Amino acid sequence: MYYLDSIQLPQGDPSRFPFSIPAFQSLDHLRFEKAITVFVGENGSGKSTLLKALALKINLPAIGSLELELDDTLNNFRAFSDGIKSLWKNKAYRGFFFRAEDYFGFVKRLRSIDQELKGDIVDFEKNLSGYGLKVAVGAMHGQKDALQRKYGDLTQVSHGEGFLKVLQSRIQPEGIYLIDEPEAALSPQRQLALFSLIKNLAANEGCQFIIATHSPILMCLPDAQIFQFEDQVKNVPVEDTEHFTIMKSFLNNPEAFLRFL
Image (cartoon, rainbow, N blue to C red; front, side, top):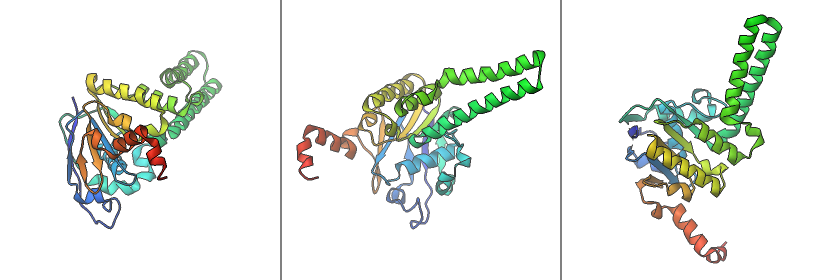
């Protein structure tokens, strides 16, 4: 099962961002034919730009310090997003948007929530007594315990471990998930763990994933639809992506590359 079927992109002034990105000057629509879609391309090619615009269009919850409507780093994408037309096979009621750089904002957000709950407990102990105090304080401790069970203490683990823990904790069956460059936080081994998670959720739990990445590991997700962003956006096999071919050639013969660097 997958949800977002296709999008139609707006046309605008090619001198203004993001319409100035070459890929968007010839791209009018994309059709999502697989449960996993991967956007690949050079820095500045438009893959993350389109992912952010899609997240705004779908109005997904954000994993970070702010919800999307309050995030001023996305202001340049809003007009572009508003012009996107989306067609759904089925409407997804679960999902989120997660950028690698948002992880630390999310950790701060959890710490802020924890501090607020501690403050509420102190206030209740000052102003309530008896059964009312027991119920109120119990509710606050229940929320603190629920957060601890779900995420643990993210300040006690590495960036990559925490990033993967958040994804494992937040992804639910039958949802749509937009993830931007998750490999920035992950070692190759952790990328393989994420690979396994996405593979199983897409195959068995009715999840749809749209991922922007530079990782050849994630590009190899089975049965994924790969869009390569260049002057045009093309649907290509993983073996034809620049990332895959460069990495493969380098690992097969690093000395040949090093002679020219």
